[in-house]
Length: 187
Image (cartoon, rainbow, N blue to C red):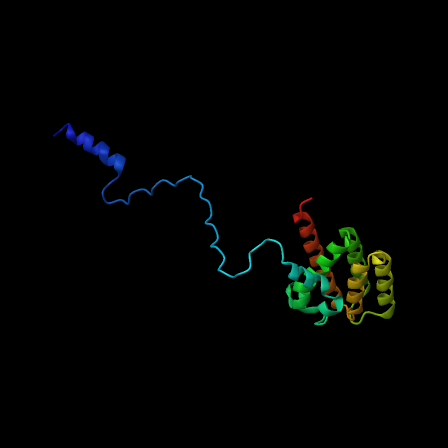
């Protein structure tokens, strides 16, 4: 029995005491693949990564006046009206993409609105600032009808200084959507 004692002691040390919890099982390092999505229900439209042609057609047909009907400012992120923050931004981005308007042209219009914001300290945007903004937008977007239609409509909706940050937020959102769509398209 004296020889069995040290062996049992060694075995107890290796496996732990009976009152202790066993160690957790080793973590498997085998990569798992995510489960495949369930098949679409019979009769449902196919799921694609591209918008449907009717969605795209609707975005291309949306006019600036329709998008801005609810105003510029609202409770959506960036202080935007909900329709402008969502469908309006997508529509303008898609129309600019369709017309081949480079991001640089949109950037120059953003700068024109930002200058108007800097010039207007508080309250109502004065007539001189509105005229300067309209002139700057015609210079920057005059040869790009799709861009000019949107920025002129936005300028027409800028009455008070608080409208200008919302317009800048909208144009920045349009720029982001446009840049992402350009990056996602295969060359």
